[in-house]
Amino acid sequence: MVATGRTSAFAHATEYEFRHLVLPRDTSRGAARRLLTEHAEYGRWELARLRRFPDGSRKVTLRRKILRVRRTL
Image (cartoon, rainbow, N blue to C red; front, side):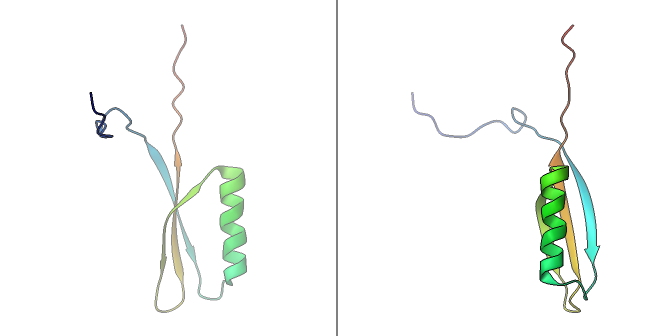
């Protein structure tokens, strides 16, 4: 039997919650990095998308898994 590496889309369905941040153009690169690092370390957020606009502002999308606790009874 040969494993193909394919899995069903429903077998590992993961739900995420999203947070959107808008950083103004005067936010330095270091300040943006510190902000995102704090969200990642303390809030367990991960970077899903970062868009930088021509005016210098940034739109950041963070995501984290929704952990569902199942009853054991």
